[in-house]
Length: 232
Image 1 (spheres, rainbow, N blue to C red):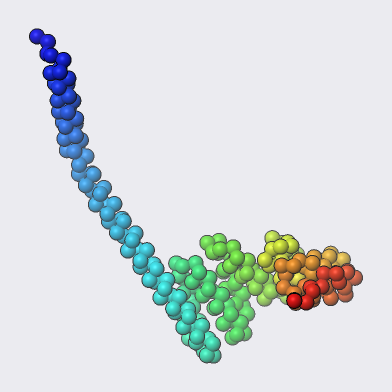
Image 2: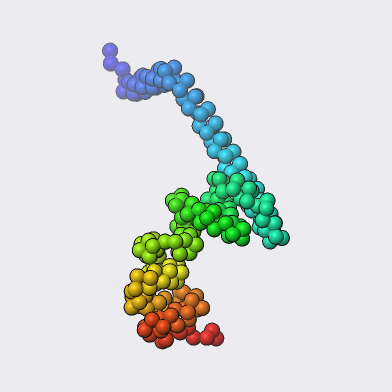
């Protein structure tokens, strides 16, 4: 006996709902434990991440305060206790703290006339690819300046080549050392051209541009038109 149209539709809906309910029950029995475990793990991971963020922020804040105290001690003339503290901070997970600690450690070493250690610290920064490029470039410039007399001219030129480009933030310093290395090689004309380029680059500090004009002239070049106009 056929069911009336409305009763048939109701029957099919009930069957469909029962089927879905049975499927859900079976799925829950089979995977419910994994689902609960997954939720628990998610909550633990989320809580751990939030805790780690807060812990890292607090730790970084403490380390910044430690750096401030170290700067204060150095300013007061204390260069005995800061080295050990700086060496510890140089292992920080914060890139800014680590880089600052290494730069400061190198500066203290220079004050103590330990140029070998200072050079090593600058080299450590320059070779740390996890640090921002401006930090590494600044360290490479300082490292090369300290090693300049003991490096072969071709080493200086090759090392600084990426920075010896007009417009680069370190063009002035890198260009000067590269030009001096060229002079060592007897390439005075090339050195004069490089000093002239430094003099013409308005991003280079005025004092360095003025010096480059004079040196370029002494080498037979002419960069007098690049002399910086007095500030208004």
